[in-house]
Length: 272
Ligand code: NDP
Image 1 (cartoon, rainbow, N blue to C red):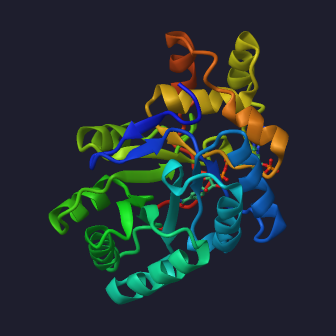
Image 2: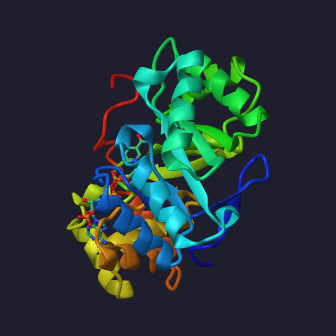
């Protein structure tokens, strides 16, 4: 397994297990440099969103990389204030133009905006049928949102991107997605850097001669969860990619799972 290794989504599209996240990465040189660094190290998957205001820089770095479009996997998302059928189609056009890389690989409903996400998703289904996007999915959807969407849509989401790390395991959501072939994807996989000094994580990291960040990212892979670590620093972008040369054993996995306290870094999808 390496940075190019992929999981096959429920519609047959291949998605790399590891990508670069760019939330809180500034537009302009900062995002261009981090995407350029990541691509040069072998990353083939970038996770952005209209909300991050850096799609232009992501697209520019991708075009300048010279890497063939079909070798890359790019995700973007429709923001909450753009939800609804017509507004979503408009927002998609803007994201597509900002990125300037032709099609989008994965387009996500960023948050389940109550009373609107069904119509938003209907627009995603149109974009999918029209061939503008290779796969569609959701983000921050809980089981009840997914159940509701299943009753009011035709295309099963390919992905659900949610906050996921040992302090927020959400086993029922994970099981639901597995059962329905919705690929689970972790945001804030490294707890946004906040819990990397946890003694259990540090102990396991020392045992394997790895960093705490690498342990958390490896934990994602062993749970069959796609992961999108963010950094603006080349040395960390490289560090976060070196997770294919070690394996957590059953005891490590159990101890990490045992850290679950249902605590979030980001907002609760029911009250955001
Ligand atoms: P991460 O868990 O990826 O952590 C990023 C933070 O950790 C940054 O402060 C970074 O600092 C630091 N960091 C990176 N690598 C290391 C390392 N090896 N050691 C120590 N610290 C490190 O958090 P994010 O919230 O950024 O989540 C990842 C991605 O998920 C986002 O960038 C975005 O693409 C997506 N996301 C999606 C959301 C959604 O609602 N769908 C919500 C939030 C995120 P520095 O950059 O200075 O290196």
